[in-house]
Each structure stands twice: as structure tokens, then as C-alpha cells.
Length: 72
Image 1 (cartoon, helix red, strand yellow):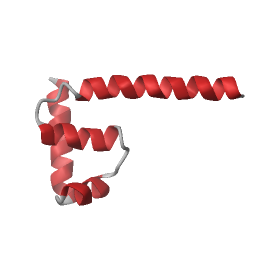
Image 2: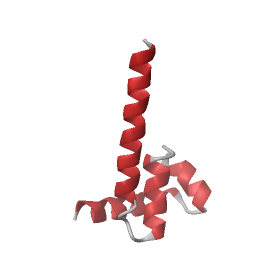
Image 3: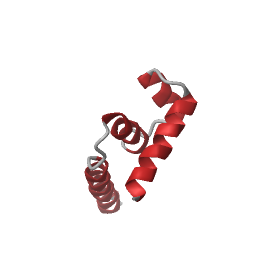
Image 4: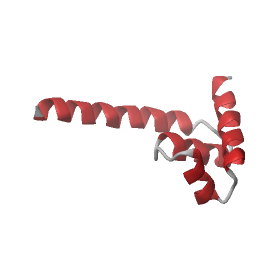
């Protein structure tokens, strides 16, 4: 059981590193921050809005904009 848990933790760490490297390609700091809070810190839209002092709708727009940039 410990081996399985350790393997899963190691895989999560590797995946987090890959995600972080991918997010680092986003050049606009505000968009990068929103993506990091979403995918690294696992915060929801409302939590991010509070932290960044934006409304939830603005955070959703920033997330959409950032994801659009990553897709191109």
C-alpha cells in the first residue's frame, strides 16, 4: 500500500511540475497568476476573486482569455 501511495504522490509531483512549466509560458503576469491559482493551488473562481480583489466574472474572463492563449 505504501508503494502505491508513494508512486501516486510522485506522479502528482511530476504532473505539477509539467503544469507549472506550461503555465510559465504565459507571458502576461495577471493571466499566469489566475492559471496558477486555478491549477496549482486549486482555488475556485470566488476564492481567486477574493485573493486578487476582482469580481468572479472578471476571473472567469481572465481564465477564458488565458486558456485561449494556451490553445494557440
